[in-house]
Length: 412
Image (cartoon, rainbow, N blue to C red; front, top):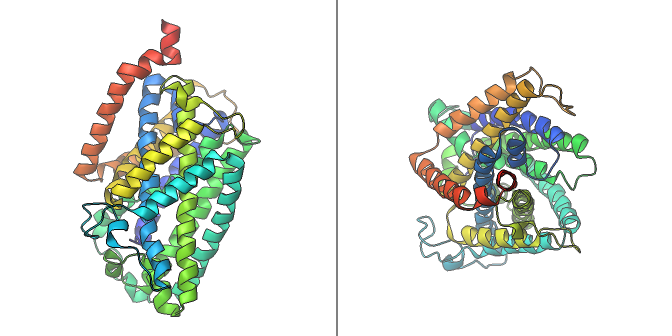
């Protein structure tokens, strides 16, 4: 569903607070582990394991949540030719909106295709991803232009139909969509000048993503009342079709949407494999995840295992539960990064910083509090899932990671 521009503004401001903290940490610790590495370097092994375990949830589930939406867009593309995927291949089992579902074939294929591209090498997958990103930006601008032709200011009345609580709940649920700048910070070892480039990439991605989110949200709600999105499938495609009455426009938009999903899957799977690579070097996960192919320079085992597990998850589990579970892991990791910035400002003010968060510790403090606030607003089921995940994680740390870690080896 499309979210309101008010909810977009809430998570935009919260994400910006964390993004600048990421930028400072990326300039100081330019390695591939993202917030896991930042926590390891500042708060110690135990906290780093908690963060890394949250990142495993965050990345694996977020990419599955995105891939789940591929089926609707594939169907919209096929309908141009009078075809449609059967219900059994359009969604996983037990999904009320899609009775008769057995497997989400589109999501499965998208994830496996992204996995194959990543296993061929970072350069090859990066070229493909860059092309798709430009296509994605172009198609979103096209949608905004089309949607604004039917813009009605009255669709924004009442501005907050579910009150401030509804906006906060929406922001909490969809916060995982800002995982991109975390993924950018996993490329530390493959960037030419990470201390300079990573902070720039994080801030620039934040600006571009926020601009596009607000533009598309305002255009979509201006074209249709917010209640309409509750039952719409592939709503942006439907708006394009209703306003243009052009099968060609619908085909281009729907096909581009599938490519856009592939782009996100490539980016997030890349980040997940690099986090596992870093954790394996520290002995926190089996060292097989740290084996790098001498030919492609990619962690083949980590990429393959992650890709297969994500593909299965995306094929069988509905989007709603995936998104909520991802958001809580994302928020927790972001909170730790903000705390790491505050810690280093106090303990190591002398460290060189290629980027420095303005206003001292004020912004990181606000960022950590905002993350905690949004976490509180997630539902009880999400907290139960998160609690169970953490229990499993602590069990893994005590039985494996603590015994095999570099810190544990030194203490022995």
